[in-house]
Amino acid sequence: MNHLYIDIETTSGAKLARAGAYRYAEDDKFRILLFGYAVDDNPIHIVNLEQGESIPREVLEALEDASVTKIAYDAQFERVCLSRFLGLPGNTYLCPEHWRCTKVWASYRGLPDSMKKLSDALGVHIAADPDVQTVLREKYIHDLRKGGNQSLESREDIPVALQTLGQCIRQNLTAERALHAYLRKYPMPDTEWANYAIAQHINDRGVKLDRKLVSNAINCDNFFRGSAARRFKEITGLDSVDSPAQFRHWLAANGVRADSVSKDAVTRLRKTTPLETEEALRLWEILSRTVTRKYDSLGEAVCGDGRLRGLFRFCGHPLGRFSHPLIQLDNLPVCRSSELSELREIVRSGEFNNMDGLCESVTDILTQLFVTSFVPRRKCRLLVAEYPALETRILEWLVRNDWEARACSRNYVQDEQPRVSEYFYDDPRVTRLCLDIDNAIRRCLTHPTIAKTHGLLFTSYSGTLCIGLPSGRALCYREPEIMFGVDGFSAIMYAGMNKDGRWDIMQGNGAKFLRDIVQGLARDVLLDAMRRLSEANYPIILHLENKVIVESEEPAALMAISAIMEQPPRWAKDLKLTTQGYACNHYLEKKQRASRR
Image 1 (cartoon, rainbow, N blue to C red):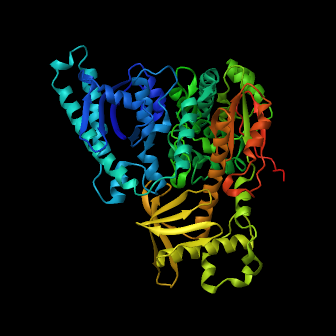
Image 2 (tube, one colour; image 1 turned 90 degrees about the vertical axis):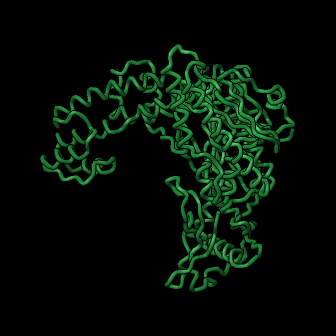
Image 3 (cartoon, rainbow, N blue to C red; image 1 turned 135 degrees about the horizontal axis):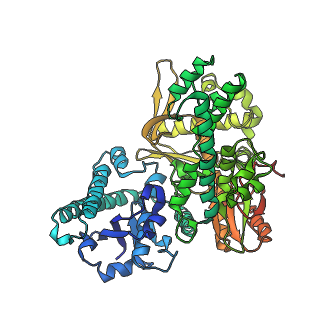
């Protein structure tokens, strides 16, 4: 047995989309209904666990066998659920090094992040309709609950629903093998699979949550929201802030014309309106901001031991960047208030009346306090180490010793001018680099050749444009081509995921691809440092675009962590890296200070 393909159907008392796989799998009502598997190229088998069937012993042994590669479309979900099914000790999980996630692999190749979108992109029918499968699963759970204490054998609708779900699993596993066969032609580097395993270990470890702060922050918001809502009704006569149109009508009746009551528009209006109207605008601003949703999301996803797991999705964004399925960690509020520590203790204690006079906006304070919900375990502190201005340093490294820069200002061809865009700052070397990248891509798309510039490798094959980075991985763009317009100018077009998460045709140029390259290399620098920190047994619990957060009993370890992070990667030995950091009892998202050279 070399490969074990897996797909499962499950049920739980927690909602997967809001709770995440870890909380979902540890719920008391969690169970695996159907277990589908296929060994190598052998037939597909469906084990109906719900009706008493058993998984073969050799398959159970293979789940923990390092010599067998387990393959699943969303491998983290299967790995976590099967860890609970196997009864592994609390908060331990099957080893991620033995798994291959085809969802991650497909994303690396520039493909969509869902089976349905994959089928559209590849032009083949490779999976059951996920919407139909969801409906069937929900119908099964509804029928099961409706049956009360009746035995499964006496209810005909349950076996029928299970049989239909089994057919969906069979189609999924057929698609899984087809997708794996396609992806094996285009391997993902071993370093990337090692990075995937590191990310999974961080997800397994999780971060401790201050549940008392979370609970009382919700209570605090409700306490002040109630008084604000009563005062808002006294002024405007409106029962709620659910209707912007009604509020704009009230403003108009009071001599204030407002085309919008968005946050920015209200901030501008407050500067020029009469006192009573300004108070109504201020109350609208408070009531329309729903801070509790963020805190509620923490409460729904936290595991029984008080830790929040599964915060990171490897290759969740195109071009290898992480996404955050539960909480938007890439857009955390910055802590600005000088009295934030005092206000945090007031909120945590539940003595909300003591906040009067200490802050103007309770909503704003609760927003800032959100990041302080992440705390270390007992007797530990959080050690935060970050790279200041990392992308700028990488850009400078890319354009270093560029002999063309000396003459680039007079080397521009006239038809290159529309493709010139500024990036970071007005530097002729950067402008030259944008044009070099743009021209290299055009060469490899119009001729069967490999183009090189600034340590970057450009190739095009099998409907994919690949930009080979010095780190050893590639940025992949699907269906690239050069489109010519009626005005004589041309554009580089490719297919990919747009900002709305839809598969779409997009336009690129040298500056756009350079931005992707710099962000990609910044990600690779951070992951290289995370690998070395993991090897040195520093337990990473969180990481953001340019920083890592370690949970440690030794605050002095921060110096060692910084020293490890300042070592440049092997592929960029002359890249100058500096760090800055601090130790804290709860996480703080601070403004970056100027970097030291």
